[in-house]
Image 1 (spheres, rainbow, N blue to C red):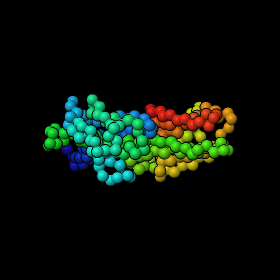
Image 2: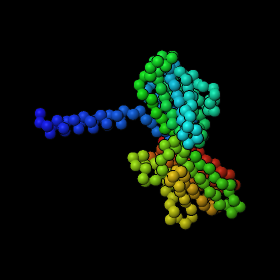
Image 3: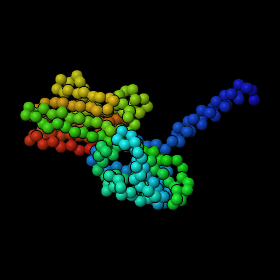
Image 4: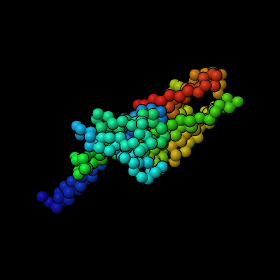
Length: 242
C-alpha cells in the first residue's frame, strides 16, 4: 500500500472515531410548557431500575448537583420530591413543571448496591421550560404578554444558534406569525434571555381570540402556550406539546 493510501486510510479512521464519539453521546433535549407533566427518558436503562440514579443540576441557580433518585428510591430532601416518580422503564416523571425545574438531568445505571461499577455512560437530558406570563389588563384594555424559554444550555434565541437554532415566535389563532411590521402589535425580544414580548390593545372583536407563543428547534415546533382573553377580561392559557 502506498504512503498516500496509508495517510488517507488513517484519516478516515480518525474521522470515523470522531463521528462515533459524537453520535455515541446519549443526549436528549426535552421541551415542555410550565404546568405540564413530563417524562425524561433514561436511554441506558437496565431491566431492573433498583440500581438507577437520577441527578440534577441547574448552573444558573445552583452549581451543586442534586441527587433526585438514589438506587431506585426517591430522595426526600429535594424541593420537587412530591412531584417526582420513577417509571417502569427507569424514566424520571415530573408533574406540574415549573420554571424552577429546567436544567441538566443525568440517568446512571450501576451494577452493585455499593455502586461498584457504572453500566454504560450517563444518559443526559436537557429540560427546557416554556413559560408565559402577563401584566394585568389595564383600563384601556392594553395587555402585555411575556414568553420565555428557560434553558440550561444558555443558548441565544436567534438565527445564530447554529445546529440547534432555537427561536421564539408569537402567532395568531390562524397560525400566522406576528411581526413588528403589524401596527397593532408591539413585539420585542431579547435573544440572550430567550424572551419575546407581545403588547396589544384589545378590541371588541377579540373575544375568544388566541395568541400563541411557540418555540422551534431547527424550524420544528417543540412546544407552545396559547393565551386567550374573554370579553369579561378573564384571561386563560393552555399548553401544547409536540
